[in-house]
Amino acid sequence: RVAAALALVGLEGFGSHFPRELSGGMQMRVSIARALVNEPDLLLMDEPFGALDEITRNRLDADLIALWWQRHLTVIFVTHSIYEAVFLSTRVVVMAARPGRVMKEVVIDEPHPRTSAFRVTQRFATYCKELAELLAEASGSPGGHA
Image (tube, rainbow, N blue to C red):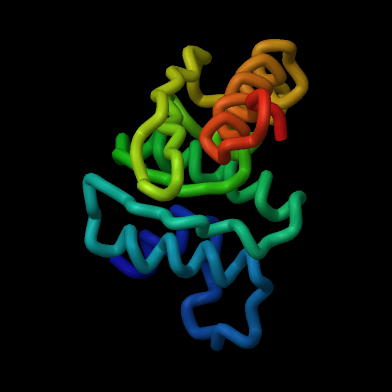
């Protein structure tokens, strides 16, 4: 099962490498593979790509969509990136802090699997703008603008 999980995340042949021998993106793939070994129906991912550069993050976002599509997983993905939320999600739950509460759920009604071409569409920009406004409102910014 370990070899199969490594193959799912594109790390065939890296099973005997030490973490220090892997890039940040590869280390994140190992973390995902470790979770997939148990063949879960649900993945909870709390800002897994936050420390990665934008190119690596976008690549892993696309890989995660492919995994979701292949394995039919439910993924709860916590992120502070509006762009990542819109690209990955079928729905985004916007939360307000202090006290923590759900402000709004936004359905991202776009077909899957998504490709990088979606990131440059007007629909993508519209979803990002809506979420930015909701987050500004959630943070208590005057007039709802950050």
